[in-house]
Length: 126
Image (tube, rainbow, N blue to C red):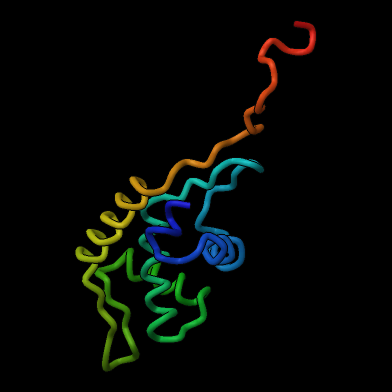
């Protein structure tokens, strides 16, 4: 999965995050279709993973805080005395570069039935 590679997490970890903590970030889709994750969602997940890793906040809370930071100026107030501020322009540049790299490196998975090996292409009735 391209988004997992860009976020530097395993596909399984990203699937778990999207299936448990970030269900409302994705559009409802049909079974069997490839997930379409927008660049905005990848940015929000990148910030959430940073908050989760560096501050130890639960992932669901990190996703909500990341959403607030993305809609504002990149600052998250901490009471009356402080705030956490991210360089949003730099984050967006780096996430876009990681996505571009991941798109070039990740092959699209084959869909449907595997090709038949060694069978005559004319079918059963010839």
